[in-house]
Length: 266
Image (cartoon, rainbow, N blue to C red; front, side):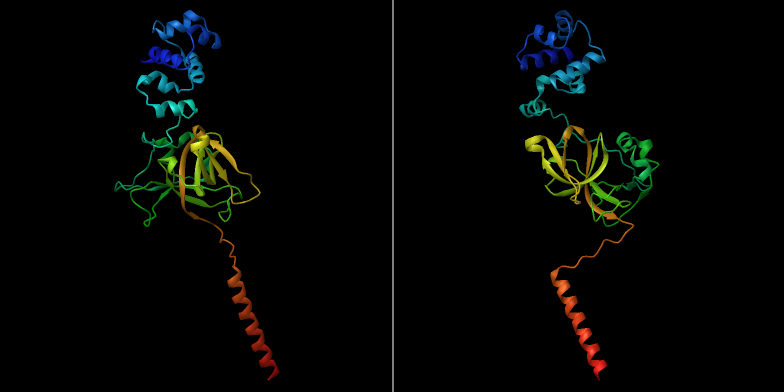
C-alpha cells in the first residue's frame, strides 16, 4: 500500500509541516509521523479523516501511487471533483442479456425505483426486473426504462416510463438535453440538463413545468446519467394547434356555417 508515501506527497502539496497537519487533525505529531513513515497503519476512522482533509478518495489514498498523477488529475482533486466525468475509466454498468446474449432493456417498476440507488449495479436486483426489446434502437448502446413520478416534466406525465440511453462521458452532454439523472440523495429524477462542468463541476436540472425551480447537483453526487430516447405513456398528450392550424380550422368552420345557411335559405 502507498498510504505513507501518499500522505507525505499530499502534505507537501499544501506546504504544511507534520506538526501543522497533526494539530489540524487533532492527532499527535508522533502518530501522524508514524503513518507517513509506514511505522503504523491508519484505521478506517483515520482514513476517512485523511480523505476529507486532503480531498482525495480513500480508494486513491490506499491503492494508488499519487506521484504518478498528471496535472489534470490534481486539478480535479483541487476542484473537489472525485467522479470520473469523462468516463475514461469504464463505468461499472451491470446489464442483463437474453438467451441469445443480446442486450435487453430492463424496466424499473415504480415499486422497485426506491431501491435503484443501492441496486443499480447489483445483478441480484437487476435479474428480477421486467425486460423487453425495442428492435428499432441501436444494438451497440445500452438502454434502460425508468418510471416517472410527479408533474414536473410535461408532456411526460406521472405513470409514464422513459426509455433512455446510458451516457459514459458526462462532458459530452449538451445543454438542454432531457436526461434521467440518478443521484445519491434524490434517486431517479427526469430533468432537462444544462452542463456546468467546466465552471462549477455541476449540472443544472430544470423542469418543463415552470412551477418547479431549477437546481444544481454536483458531479460527485451523481451515480448515473441516461439520455432520453422515448417514452411510454398511459395518456395521450394534449394536442395544441399553432396559429396557422387554428386559422385553417376557423376558415373551414366558417365555410361549413356558410353552406348550412345557404341550404336553410334554399
